[in-house]
Length: 332
Ligand code: PEP
Ligand code: MN
Image 1 (spheres, rainbow, N blue to C red):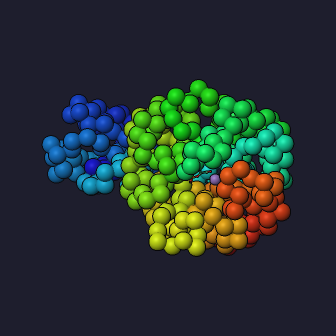
Image 2: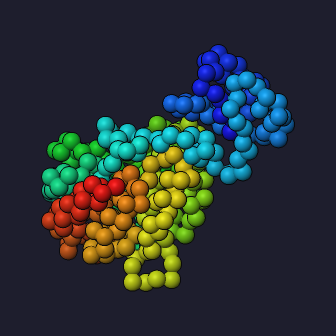
Image 3: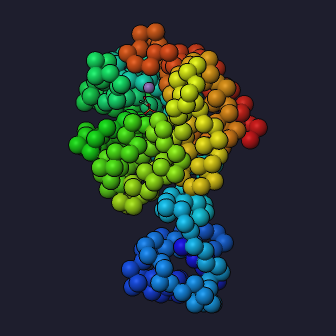
């Protein structure tokens, strides 16, 4: 249920009202906007008398919300959330590009790539140190050494880092990482989501391979319900019967998620398509559809990449994509 409080209500009136809800065992999510305050009521609201509430002087309107996701819901929090990753803001009109290799492979590779993506205009560095591979015989990442090299690359370029965490036990290793990515395969790893909810670290939450938007939002809800509001949702393509592309890029998910939720949305055209040639047009499509950020895989020498070689851009190709991103941004 949401109760919209009139602009002229005083702080103490709102406080009293919140106290009244809390006495009835209802948790209140307060969102102060420019024109009104929205109180999101979470819990069993069946006992609340809507007519009584609606009759209060300070109440503008009351609506029952049947969506199972509450904290992530735009109805509860009409204004865009802005997530700050090491000083780089995403959402609410702030746009960012996170770029870098699929996997961190060596010091030379990550530092060269980080410098190249920064020169092309990326504002965040991505790179996997712990890799969730389909085959246990494939390269699994450099683990702690990969994290150490990412930190070196941040020192060399100033770019904050995004890297994938696979289990709650890894949290101490990620202490100095700016944004924790939850990969598609872990979108419903509820123990991981709950552990991330107990931190204040920005979380980039990827849509599962076959997850609906509601399931993605419920996973965000797991993190938020533990107290961490710093979440960025990611559309990275879903499984369909199409085999030409690695996944099917659900462009409509970007606009739909922005409609359903106040959380920023990042699009990942690299995993969505799996093809270098499609990264530029899909980046543009994502921007026009309202994406707050893009995550793009770039490698200083893609031919030698130990994972996702077919989709990683060279620094020159990335520079060309950044140019197209600038053009797409100028028309929205
Ligand atoms: C990645 O970002 O390298 C990755 C493994 O992505 P996803 O979880 O979307 O497959
Ligand atoms: Mn990858």
